[in-house]
Length: 132
Image (cartoon, rainbow, N blue to C red):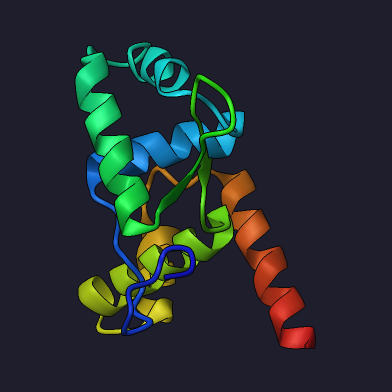
């Protein structure tokens, strides 16, 4: 099994708790369980044993890899951040917007929380895509 895919070559969808761990590892790079747990505890209380068990499960699923060469095992994300985010976004668009990225964009652009800067960035991106 390579990376974040099953034997059928289907992407594994991380749970909410797994995504929290992935976010820490994406931001900080490879870490020990203790270091990940310390980061998670900055937002909410998480038991060390819960973090350890979840990271072991994530390793079994192929979401993480573990470097066992040192006494303290170092965990790495098996899949690139963008690959995982692309998969999750595609699944979200398929589920929530019937596969229509334009419906998602229309909702984002119509959202009153969208700043003028965000709208300008979106327009710039659309212009670049049109020019391709």
